Length: 138
Image 1 (cartoon, rainbow, N blue to C red):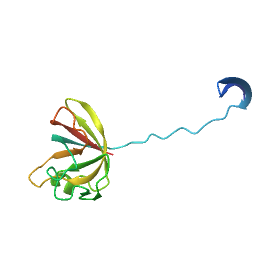
Image 2 (cartoon, rainbow, N blue to C red):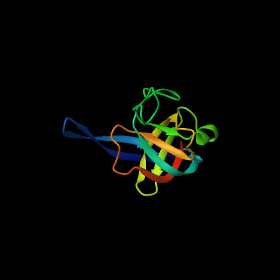
Image 3 (spheres, one colour):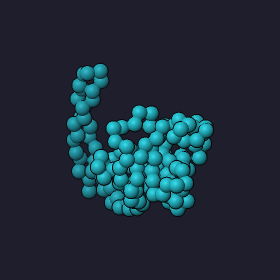
Image 4 (cartoon, rainbow, N blue to C red):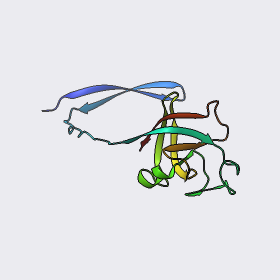
């Protein structure tokens, strides 16, 4: 059995509002299946910023470990790079003090002396230099 239902539809074109009446029938829609997303969350005791200049990178700051340097990239320590994330993976960086810092692409590695570290490439560094937090791997 179907029931007729009358819907009011407003259409806005160039600032004018027009009204139309559409007649439709009730139909039974399938029940949506729940989707479960498992995200990996990794605690990061050291989150810092760096700039693409030779005294903060190496002799060639235009080239990162995964290719040419690009915007919205991060460098991760080699322990994270080997076990958790790889080139081109998208991550969210969250600070314990400052909340969500942003969404970035893993595109470089830090100096071998660092572990459990995320280094965010920026043009203008913020007023704070180092924080702790976590990353979410998308």
